[in-house]
Image (cartoon, rainbow, N blue to C red; front, side, top):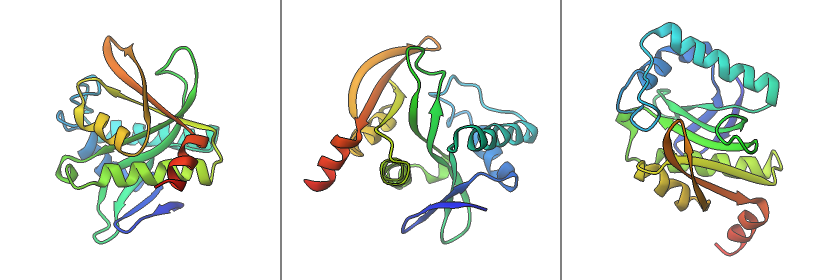
Length: 181
């Protein structure tokens, strides 16, 4: 098991097949998928397929979403992190920051904490020059988190017939924000 980030409350590590039940709990919840095309998974096998796809990203791109684990309980909370995104924005590929949590962990600052840790990892460890993210326009919480961690709103675009807000931050901007608190 490869651990990438540890925060006060969380461990962010590679997704493993042992996360299938937690992934199923996460991705089978219709509320979790409210802003994701409303297509929750229906079987444990689909959860395994999701994990297999992410693990292929580790091999192909050297990065992919990580499991978020509660340090105290060892509970699977969801996933967060970066991935090399080639589909969402048809005009360009980019490193995408994302997160998805089980509903019982919403409203506890975990998405913000894991997103900030992932952003820092992308610039400090991977030496990326820019990180992007998207959120459905109507997903108010996700839009708020992306702004809170320092990403800049760039534009609105349509993906899968749903308007999304596009955010990005360059490493130089991130460094400046780090220095000026």
